[in-house]
Image 1: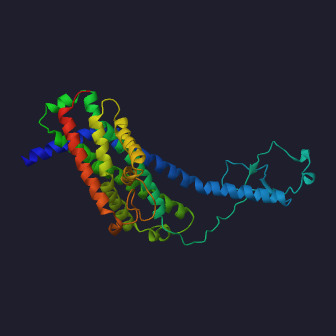
Image 2 (image 1 turned 45 degrees about the vertical axis):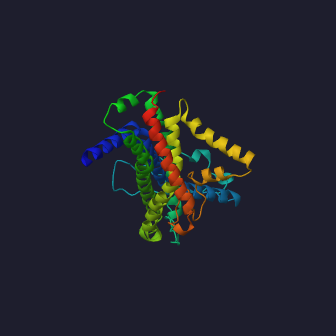
Length: 353
């Protein structure tokens, strides 16, 4: 019996991932690949852009101080490019001003001209102490979390509504699957499966960023292991980001449950069904009582990042449990349970569209 129920839940998870593969799987992969390519291109052209900028600055300086560049021309009437091993004849022409330029008849364009730029040694970069890459990696992770929350919210608003819209709910009612299993599976997708995919892709993207940074440091003739790896605490970073979402998940559970309830309740627009009652409650509370408890509770349980040791939202700096408002968190979890029960009830008795 246990193996049969586990197989049903696993099949339901597969069905959700197959149906929403584009948003839950391919979207984070596409974002990661795009950002990785952009970082690779920036690393490859960084040195060229720097060299071009140095050349332009040198030309500007020469123009400002009245110094003309030196043109080196290799000329040899008897020199044949097809014969190897022969010495090259060098003829140097220095032009310091337009008045000192050679006469026009001195230039024989029937000859073979080869211009050789002056070879300069590659500038040596002095090793300097650099800080940790963790702040930049946090920015990448935060961007992926923002995308994940938007995708997850859209998934929750449509997961129960779309079944009634396309009448596929009739098929599921004919299957030996309970409403509890259907609702809890979709809630688990939003709380566990989607974060696991996005956080996993985020970690791979951060790894590629570290490799790009090491490549750039190596091209600057510095030790990438000493400059990059020695200044990054990847163990702490992993604990903060994974543990941070575990903290965030406890806070967003009531918001996710409310979106799912709106999906089960709505006849036309789940989005309006989700926000209209909340806005109405906030307005009534403000008009009748002059308080803002509803708005404060909504803001507290919507994913956001307030910086520092944030106890709600995107939590990056460790698990500071002593700063958590336990009453608010457990109240939110109770509300999330109520919304799940309501979603199951509506799923069972309201399948008309």
